[in-house]
Image (cartoon, rainbow, N blue to C red; front, side, top):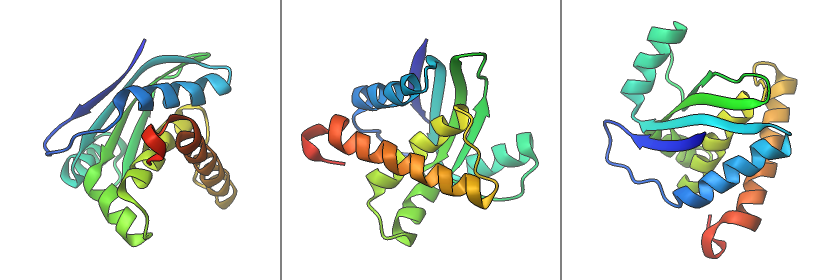
Amino acid sequence: MSITFDVQEIDFKLKNKTKLTKWISSIIKDQNMRVGDIAYLFTNDKKVYETNMQFLNHDTYTDIITFDYVTEDLVSGDIIISVDRVKENAELYNDDFQRELHRVIIHGILHLLGQGDKTKREAAQMRKKEQDALVRWEEEFAPNGSR
């Protein structure tokens, strides 16, 4: 069982992989679930759009696509993140790139844990859980108090 981080078609280096793995694992374990095989792929808008069209038939750009392979209490999945979209959203919402990246990283995990975001109520619950997880990152896992 593992959490992996790969990059494709972009020049990008993910910071703090070990601490991110511990943070993600803690969020999963808090829900009485076990970490399975979780693969993150960081790429560009084009790749995420093509994947969205091919597998979900969605003709839209998005920051994240989550493929859920959860079985019973074993959390597994593929999470594809557009770094282009994360950068754009950080600027749009006047937030730090790393914080927005961490929000998207945990957003995928929350989906794997069963949290939806299609309705207004679900979206509000998702935002609350994202915020709680970000606070936990900043208080317990961020190196030297950084985001």
